[in-house]
Length: 456
Ligand code: GUN
Ligand code: FE
Image (tube, rainbow, N blue to C red; front, side, top):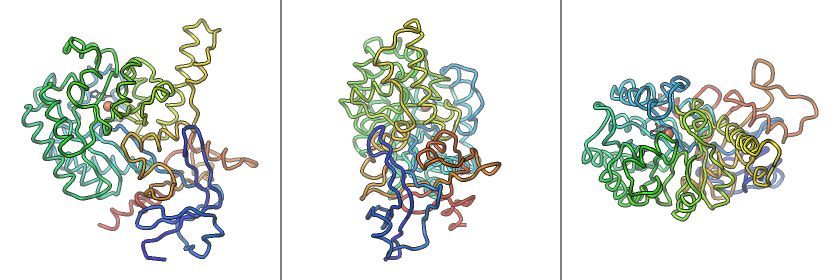
């Protein structure tokens, strides 16, 4: 076996289809140059085995989680500032926090903490918003590269309706966005891709949005923004752009709806909007916990998927107060159950329509959203999301046996591996993650960030 070939043996859980949890038991996944070369049974591959990547009784491999919406500088105040609606929350907490990343020493330290926290929680891929200023975004990219995460990263653009000390001139914003793209693409790091990031319609002039759309086209980049998040935002856009019927119509006109676009939230999208986004191949990042705090409606995951929309899952740190995709999966399930309960309350508590039942998702659909759904949203479905041959090996080695004070839940006699795995999704945390892999490389083992350790 070549030096860069590894075999991982044990039980592998993944979701090849929406709602379908598959267990590959006593399997061997052979990884060559970071990619899955073969998936076979333990017997067939026994001759190849090395003492490497072995899952034991109660330990399972699962695809790494994909967070499709994170504000990197907002990690600093995650878990605080929970008392305001969106527009005031931005002014009071968010813009000052993001602006403070002008201090580049602070940016270095804070971004290392952020990326480590996300890797420790099993987020192998993240779609990040940086901040307005160019330099701290370069530090964010450097940090991701150094610690081994996979990411799509954008410099935030905003040229109006912003604080005096946290706003850019239109031309400067477009120039810096281009600089950022060149810097990121210039690294030739296959794990990191740049992204065009007009913050949201209220803080962007049409000139800025069109200029950024042109850059996305020129460099073939991803695009991310916020769409139809809450009443305050939607009403603001209606006042600013009375000629357009919806946020989606504005983004369409600006050329920002592409097959590489991810729009966050979308709780107030109409069916017509959803069909429009679906026709463009644009995805929505469903951020349930953030929507509970800052949104004004439930995002209807199954309904949106039935209309053909690509849907990924996001934490939306810090609007979402937990930097964990395990939390996001649980919140997606709770969101779907709240949606059903809400409809039941409106119907007087007696009439249950078939649609109410189809609104509900289980942990299996939530895991699909956190892996395959995210991969689809980021146009990485051929690269990550499941343990299929040809994909890159982004995986977590989960230990479900840590009871008592060593772990977040206890296990009991007679539980099968499906029950153990469901307990991990519903109750687990970073203590259950023994190893984290990106592109076949171990980036975290125990308390050690392996790539950082190699550099130091
Ligand atoms: N809309 C514009 N900016 C933001 C942000 O930082 N977070 C959220 N949740 N919504 C936004
Ligand atoms: Fe957001």
